[in-house]
Amino acid sequence: MLSVSKQYLYLVIDQINKCVITNTNSAATANAVSNGILNSSPMVVWFPYIELNHNIIKSNSDENINYKLLRQFKTKFSNAGQSTSDSNMYEVVDQTPNGRTFDLIQMDQKLITQEWIARRQLGNFRARLMIELETHCERYLARSVNFCGDEISLPYIQKQLELSNPDFNIYSPGIQEWADIVEMPVEVAYQELKMKFDSSSISVMRVHAIWSKFVNKFNNITLEDNITFAQLFERMDTHFIFGNV
Amino acid sequence: MKSLTVGTSFELKDKKDLSTQFTDIKLFTDIHGVISGSWLVDRSGATQLPFRTTLGQNYLLPNFETINNLTLEECCVNRARELLSSNQTLYFLYSGGIDSTLGLISFINATPDTSQIIVVCNNESIRENPNFYHNYIKLNFKLMATELFMQRMKTQILDGIVISCEHGDLLYGQDFGSVALTWFGEEYLKAPPTRENIVKFFKAGKMSTLGANCWFDLFSSNIHLSARPINTVYDFFWWTGFNWRWQWAGEKIKLRTAMPINIETFFSSLEFQKWSVNHTQHSIKKASDFKYDYKEIIFNFTKDQEYQDLKIKHVSISLYYLNNAFVAVESDGTKLTKKDYALINYYQPDNFISNWLKDNHSSSE
Image 1 (cartoon, rainbow over the protein chains, first blue to last red):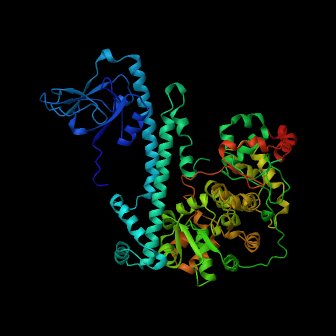
Image 2 (image 1 turned 90 degrees about the vertical axis):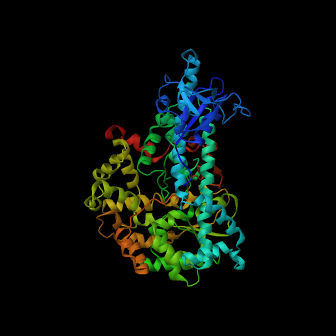
């Protein structure tokens, strides 16, 4: 939709040390990765909040680049009512280095243990899987996008379809108006809208099911399983095209 | 002994040990690089492949002597009338491709009352032939979304007959033919169907030399039963479809339904088959030249010159998108899911490929 901007960092933050385990490219993939890593939370931070003197993107392929997420509260009392839950996973400071609400700073070297590096590697691996999975989903979801205002119009179209009953030649005002604008008989308009609505809705629900299935599957794969990225995605398109055969 | 009517060979990709253990299975697998997914069955019943498969009575190679020679247009209208005479609801699977467009035109030509027909389609169908959708389909037929139809087929017994256009390709010998045209050009299709010429095609499809030779012999083993003289590479390819893939085309949709289904393919009537046997292919210089006769009838109806000149075959599979399927159907109708399916259970050691290996292995290597 027009209201969506992608100028965000989608981070997965360790709940204990408030450091970045990995970052992804969407809220859905950040949630998916976090769901598979105990004691982690997704955090969405508006990109301009953060100084550009970091290498957060490269940290996805280099576990030696590590950051902690900070949030500043300028007065002692301004963090009243806050809690470090999901959506609020950061270290509170009086002043961030950049002076803005959020910032990333280099992680304390003493905290970078082998266990931490392993956690980062798992996070980065899973982030790659989820991003690739989401890319597959988007490709098949695109089949169901027919209008830039779909997100607003589809719920209303559904309601108008439900208010109509072609068996009794009853058509809702919305359907009648649509038919009038398109210059189409109302009964033809009804069945065209219904056909497209059913097709899109069922397709999207199926993609949702595939997404849910593979998020769970990927979150049960560890690096010790030695399954390669290529192996996991070798048959993914077959799955999307032909289902589970 | 359990036997299949339709199966899939995906398992062979996962279980390489089957191919390693049995050389005949390895060679059997070779063909799937060229014919993805098809489950081959010899309509004459004479040639056995490595996995036991029952030939359906309705797929037997017909005796064409008593069948009239009709024009394609006559075949189309007769078939439409035959299906309409059932007086049942007809769920017509419309992909928007050449075959299903010709099928719907046949119904329009056969009857002024199309209320018996529900056209099952989606956005992909419209995109394939937008003029036909806007000018004819939406004004003359009831519609149902493809995805909704496929969902219902899983859970309900439909009150009518499902019409698919699967056999349209096989009347034409298009699949191998169009690939070969791309690889080797028009002259190749007109060349004699010698071992050298056919093996060249299979090897270009990444088959081994052994596999290519074996499959040439296998497809040739019953070619003398063809009612159509096999004089060219194109005729040979026609035979591989008309004889070997006919049952697959009729049965494969049953992998998608949990419930019993009453399904007919539009192009499977004996009249169509007779037409196919007698049909002489027009010159094929480019992909859009295939199915010239089908497109001619469509043009006469729609006057859509662009479609006539440029439309090519497009793989229409949105019917299957994200839709789980069974992997095999046994001859008693039992449908098998992936976890219940083991191809080895249907293995028959005495098959054409294993016997061919005994006779030819050393000389073909």
